[in-house]
Amino acid sequence: MTHCIATPSTRTCYPQAPWRGVLLLMGASLLAAPALAQAPSASSSVTTEVVAKGLQNAWAVAFIGDGRMLVTERPGRMRVVQANGQLSEPLAGVPEVDAVGQGGLLDLIIDRDFTNNRRVHFCYSEPGLGGNSTALASARLSADASRLEEVRVIFSQKPKVSSRLHFGCRIVQAADNSLFLTLGDRYQRMKDAQTLDNHHGKVVRVQLDGTPHPSNPFVGRSGALPEIWSIGHRNLQGATLGPDASLWTHEHGPQGGDEVNRAEAGKNYGWPVITYGESYGGGAIGDGITEKAGLEQPLYHWTPSIAPSGMAFVTTDMYGPGWQGSLLVGSLKFRYLARLQIDGARVMKEDKLLTDLGQRVRDVREGPDGFIYLLTDARDGELLRLRPPTGAKS
Image (cartoon, rainbow, N blue to C red):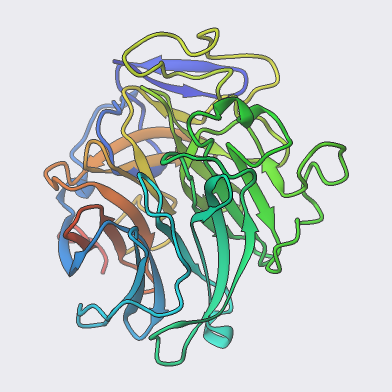
């Protein structure tokens, strides 16, 4: 097994990966290759504490003030986690979701101006004519946090298809308040990721009213959907803004080839023309190539796949030296948290954390209190808080 770091012009593979900036990933089989001598890392001593239990296949967490958190459960429920860890009854007003396979009630964020407008944005698998697709909705959280009000679907992925797989569905709000949404290729429609007449395998960008962002790269192009931001993706389950406000994403590869990318306007990230993965059970996908002119190389990729989910940069210094600037990603398959060091746009080293956790990590967020929070994906899932290592600044 190898780990590879790629740029548009180079690709270097290591039996282990070098060390320098940091990205956190819950995952399993990335190897980190030291160009420098390995030294014991304080990050290896981080632990978790349980904030709340009894969450059924939790997917996303957002912070709504006074120590409370809003959590989605994939079967179609949204709950408040009280400051004491108690769960509220399911909120009223959540729209019908198609909770089949990987679908259901998925990502959730609060608006940048939540303190004043109490707006939340969430995405889910929306049933409809022809099957289902990923939808993005906005709503107002009631004053007593018991229901969603003024619910409005502002974007629906087109076309709807009959599928239980690859919904994508991570939301990021940009500095101008517009919304990025990641969209899966729906599995059997993977070739759609290379064409502009659909939303499969894309990142889209819309304004708060659902209209396409005027700076989107394909606005005005004949035959292209104006919401599209980037193309050539498979199933993106992680997205966040970087320190420079660039959009970072990660996506599931097939059998190998999970990727970390910076999704830039108008760029093509290759799926399924190029991939470092292969068909399930073995065999090449397409021509079996990993590079092609005009298609972007991932910043980082994993083989075998770790099944990444959730993504957040660390801005706090609570966890000790070297943690600020790290990126956090969860792994569903190998059930650990990884810390990736980053130098600019280069991932330099992976530091595996919580390797004995034994739970699928679905979401990773940094809270307003500076702590890192994790959601585990299970019938009786948990909301966890990451505790700093002994001696770290807190």
